[in-house]
Amino acid sequence: MEVRIADSVSAHIVEGALAYTPRFALSGPFVAVGAYTDMQEKERELASTFGSAQWLWSEDDDLRFRLADRELHSLCLYLPQAIVASDSSVSGWERVRRITGGLRTTADVNFSVPQTNRCWIAPGATHLICVGNSAPPPDASSFRLSVAPDLDLLFTQGHLVGWLLGDPARYLTADWEMPVSEAPAEATRSLLALTLVMTMSPAVEAIEDGDPEAWRRLRGLAEELRALGEDRRRSEILQATVDRLVEWHES
Image 1: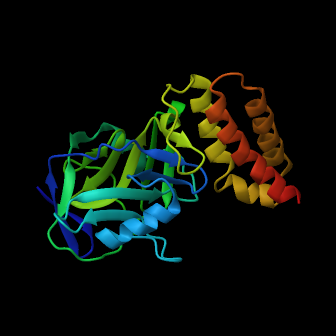
Image 2 (image 1 turned 180 degrees about the vertical axis):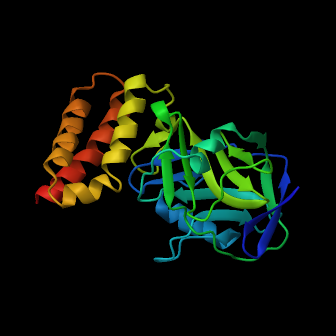
Image 3 (image 1 turned 30 degrees about the vertical axis):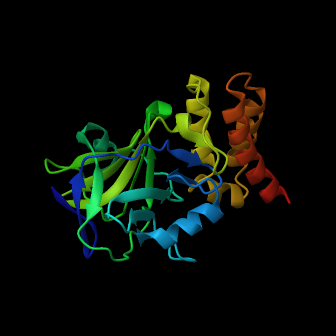
């Protein structure tokens, strides 16, 4: 099957999804899938790969392909800054058909994949779904291509329109390190959802404007995270994210 991953670039779906564990890093925030363990290794990978990459302020997602065989080698997908309420154009992706595989481009050329700009968190933080403003609602042609564990690229009418991360709390990290192997606590999932809501638009704008209710909710979340007695590594990552926002706006 041939699909379009950029305006001028096509790829074939092939066997062989990436075996790397996704990392959902709140320092970006981004989802990284690849062998690199820090920014320096990620930058060195550029020499042996081609594709889309974030250059300076380009606001592109990273989809890197091997020069040797043109197959997908790594991804770094950046979260939008805005949380949206549920609607069928986003939440409907939970119900489309799902296949597993990789991608092989038809040519070894660099290209641009703009970052998505709408983010939706499913109830219970079971999924994180990100799509572009121009993405149409999923239809009979739509499918999810699982390119790594719990990470799907979203296609409709043969075009890449976004991505989906299942159980994002499981893959939570502070930065480039690997996530802990234990399953997340249910409380962690709900607190992750609250953290994302409170540290993205429109909540951030309300906090910046001095909205007392927004400040109360943010400080309440910080207290709840400090009191969480289980799943400490993940709760510490969430707490540090919230604390940075509190300190930034209080300074």
